[in-house]
Amino acid sequence: MKKYLLLLGLLGATTALTSCEKFLDVNTNPNNPTSTTPNFLLPNIIANGIQTQMFTALRTPYIEQYVVNRTANSGTNDQYIFTNAQSTNTFNYSYFQSGGNIPPMIAAAQAEGSPYYVGAGKIMQAVILAHVTDMLGDVPYSEAYQGGANYTPKYDSQQQIYATINQLCDEGIVEMQKPASANVRPLYSTAPSESGDILYKGDVGKWTRLAYALKARQAQHLTKKQGTYDPVAVLALCDKAFTSSADDAQLNYQVPVLPLTGTTNIFGVTRANFGGATFSANIIKYLNGTTFPGVVDPRFGIMAPTTSTGANPGVGTSLPATGINITPGVTPAITDFYGGWYARDLGYFEVITYHELKFIEAEAAYLAGNRQRAYDALRAGIRAHMVKIGVGGSSSPPPVTFPQITTAQINAYLASAAVPQTPAAVTPRSIMEQKYIAMFLNPDSWSDLRRYDFASNIYVNFAYPVGTAVNQSAAGQADPKLRYPRRLPPGATEVLYSPNAVAKLFADAGVASGDINTYITKPLWFDQP
Image (cartoon, rainbow, N blue to C red; front, top):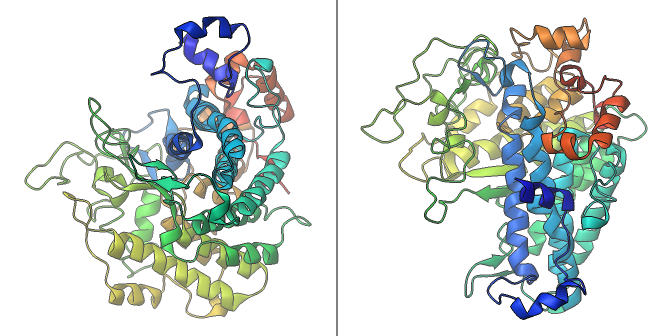
């Protein structure tokens, strides 16, 4: 534990040996090198940077009411009662398992003349920072990664972090636009083994479009900020971002190397993190014809089994846990959650997707007064998501087999009462509820809920959890929308080793130190006018 926490405090210490350490070079182990080339650092940055969001998603789907606890009044996630320990991986993976490797990779890439690795490092740093700041608020960056020179880097404001994200994306785009001939090392290689860009297999065009997609997402987060938010600028970013689902930034789950077993899917049945969960009534009502009377979504039976009825947060369900056949002929004691497409052990985790981008475009176009573009983008986002989970990936991999969605079913849904039939009929609700469905389990769906203050006229099925009196009392708010979680608490290791920084977070939020129940209800900078 002490060794781990020491590494935690280093925030990405460099691997260079000091002059004193050179005395020990006679004992250097050639099989344990202290430096490496950028192609062996980038896979870790990508994998752990994306896994950061997976760990966050152990909490956020309950806040977003995609899932709830099966047991009533369990006093945890779906009742918005959190601890510092629940945020630790969100912070730690952002800095130590992923971000801490970016500065040395960029330095090595610059030294050898491989600008594509520099670009990938900057864009991944932007992805990592965007996630950690949207979950936690103020976080370190300007003084991070200094090793022993600074064990307690200051926390930069979220406003500054947003500016840094834009700058990193812009700098990454410049690097990715350089010719391949300017690179000493290919961005991706399979010989003698896979190395380098495991996200896009060396496609610099997709990296560039990812940077623009991230810029568009972060810019759209600022809808509350009059004078700062510019929907026309967001639309210009969308024009340069993803062009199809083939551009989606997502990580395929893998079967670990022996002796480990199972898969890397945080939502999967093997890892069993969601064994105590079931689908929320909120999401099921969108799919089963309740919210849109008479319109059963063709994704019902894929996203969730058609036997699922859902439950409200804090209420629980008396339905039995058994009855979902994942392996033909076998009925394991599992919840209905594990019968859904997103819980496939060998599926993938989505970071930013083309269908999300189309919904960003639809909302920005609506706010810009361009109803036709909003209408077209909304329908394109719905179609893209249905095709992705119901046509392109519904029957793979085995043994789980999901229904196929036909073109006729997609067209019928688009022609139904669930979707506006004219540009004039497009509303914020029609955009955001369809985006909510398609963003299933994605932590950034929480950003939308916060921007819209969990409004009941937008998210019509949302239910304030039963049994959250501790939060209601601590928040002291009469309006329930102001008592929903707006941020995660600081990670436990930061409470221990950066207590002054954590104390400042609470003070800046106007909350007594350590009062987590009130702290999590305070809006972050992007969530304020």
